[in-house]
Length: 323
Image (cartoon, rainbow, N blue to C red; front, side):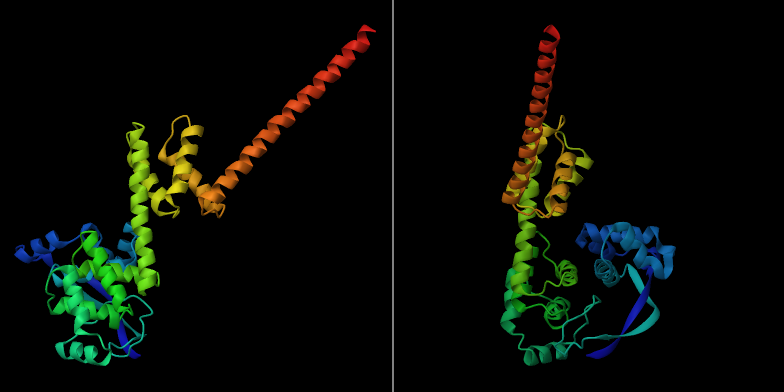
C-alpha cells in the first residue's frame, strides 16, 4: 500500500466561460441519462461549494462513486473544472501493489511505461486487452486501455469478470469505457468483483428486467392504463423484492381476486408483506396462502357452529315455554 491524497474537490462550470465549444456538444451526445441529470443538478446547485457532492447525491439518490465518475467525464470534456479544497491523507492501494481497493475513488492514470510494467508484472496479457477490444468491436485508445487495466489492477476485478462486464455493457447498449467504469464502481460498492459473483448478479438483473416486462404486460392486457405511480410500483415489484416470476404471478392473481380495482400499487403491497415475512419462493408463498385460507374457513365454521348452538338453545327455550 502507498499513501495517496484523497481530495475534496470543488467544481466550477467551465462551459459558462466564453463561446460553447464543439467538444461540449460531443460530450453531451455521448453522455447517458445519469450524466445529464448530474450536470443539470450541478448547474442548479453550483453555489453549494464543497457540499456539492453531498447535495447532488442526496437529491438524485445516487452513490458518491457515480457522482465522481460523472464529474470526471464532464471534466475530461472540459465542461467542468475541479479544484482541490482540502486534502486528507488516506491509504490507497498502489497501482503496482496488487492489493484490492477498499473504498471508491478515481482510477489512476497509467503512463505507457506503467501499463507495460503492469502487463509484465501482473501477467495482464495482451490477449486480455485483445479480447476486451473484440467484445467492444473497436480499438481502445490509451485512456480506454488505462481504464481497462485499472479495473483489474486498481479495483481488483478478475480479468474474466471484466470481460463479462464488457459483454453486458454491449448488450445493454452502453459501449463505452466511461459507462463501464461507472458500473464497476457500483459493483465494487456491493463487493462484486469475481466472475462467478458477477455472472450471478447480472443474471438476476436480466431476470428482473424480464419479470418487469411480463408483469407490466399482465396489467396492460387487462386494459389498465398505467399511471406514473403504477409504473413506479411495478418497478419496485420487479427490482426491489427480488422474487421469481412465479411468485409475481401469484401476487398478480391475488390482486385480481381481492381488489375491486386491481392495481400495481395493491400488488406491491402484497409483495412487500411477503418480503417482510421472509418468504422467497412460490412454495413458501403458497403455504402461507393455504394457511390463511384454512384460518378463514375455520372461522367461518366456528361462526356457523355458534349460530347453530344459539338456534338450538332458542328452540329448547320455546319448547319449554309451550309446556
